[in-house]
Image (tube, rainbow, N blue to C red; front, top):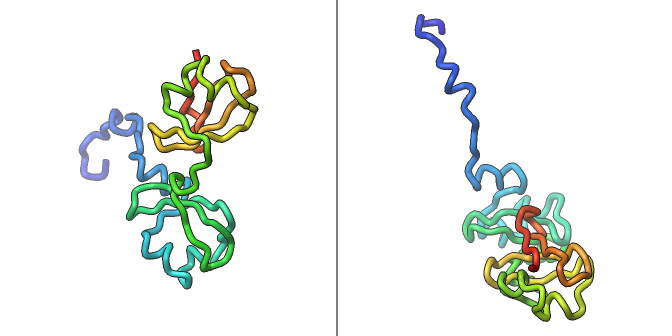
Length: 142
């Protein structure tokens, strides 16, 4: 280095593990509840569309636009939760009704344990349920 100290190559080569908040900021815009409630704020006046996901830093969770108009509300996934809902154990149980009755590829279910939306990969009882927003969230019935 310029001051004569040797460069610590181990620090340069160390893997970087971003925090959850850093990843969210890259993937989705971050706003406060007050910003989202203000119809004149740019989050509501620029590039808003129905279903647009943004991170509400006040709530600490993802919210979704109900429409494209500036006055259209923002809702959490729990507020938008479709029926039916199921627990993680039910999703993982190949014999449970959630896996044996009216299951189809793409069917959306609310996981009440994790407060997340999951979708069926296929129609078979043993086909997995994957997270809508987290492809690594996998509930494979056994």
